[in-house]
Image 1 (cartoon, rainbow, N blue to C red):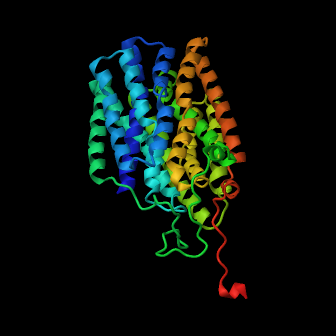
Image 2 (image 1 turned 45 degrees about the horizontal axis):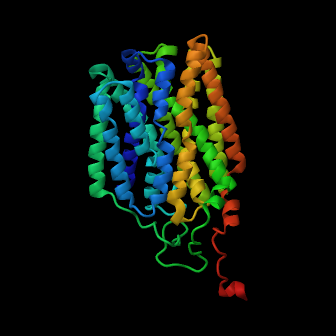
Image 3 (image 1 turned 180 degrees about the horizontal axis):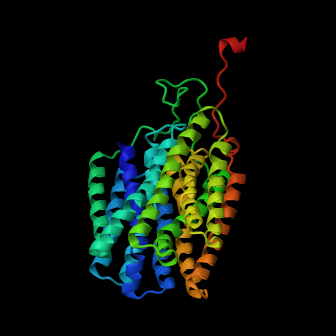
Length: 433
């Protein structure tokens, strides 16, 4: 039940992010905005996004997940109000800044809440389900919100999201609570990864708090953050500019563009659900997390980056759509996996704070990519040339981030260096002899 509520939470979260991009063309036409001005509005979402993620992480050990997620969802509803009262650039900026501040902690804090219900070794699939809320948000939001925008005007989409956030917050306040895996010791697990009824010899106790500087400078943590940075670059571009690109550059009608966005989101959803159970199975069979989770997250960003760079270089429409689908879906694998690898080198008592730092750093592209793309479009000799520069720059960023993650993420090595590995099993009577 908690997992389902958190997936829904993430669905609303990403619908809130996507609505500006879906309504970009009518908003730009009504308010007579340049590409750079629209890009600036889109980037304003990130002004407080990372900072709020940092701060919420440090309060996560003092405030229950029930309260934190409830307050966030209510603020999402409030953030939609300014543009409903006054349709203007200041109102759009104010709403997006408040929304960014309220959504900055959403992914790490909902992941932290989810991890309280699943033991280590059983978190791959729940993590993928949580992240899949993003794909579902786009998959469902694209046709629904586009239908509202074309049928009732773009303001109706903002109003619908405000109501949805209020309803979710009330349901969460009634049903949401913290799970059993939020304790000061690491519970013993059986061979299937389930909690054992009694502690057994050889299980290490929680080692206590470690210096954040030591935690954050491990190769695993740096690689996880950099990999997420590359994935977030593509994600920011998708939310702010993909609908506009499909309509203005590829000449799609609003409904057809919404369908394409849903197809891309659906592909990401399938990848998340297909890969994460495999990762869990590999971990239970003893495959190193470096290969089961670390290399995979880096490879996902690398492949998406190569596809991104190739999008404006091909002329065939079918090939372009395939590359768009790969560029804006495959990177999604980095998000559940980078939380899994980060959690492997962090004491549970500090996990919420570190998740906030990881999310805040990894999502900095939201502040950069939308405005930079708008600048490319206004500065280029043609719209096509602007998209060429934007896609090539994005592909280069993602390629560097993906390779860095593949090389540096080594959870077992870094856990040993931090003293977080399980203690050696106590010798049995037979082995003692």
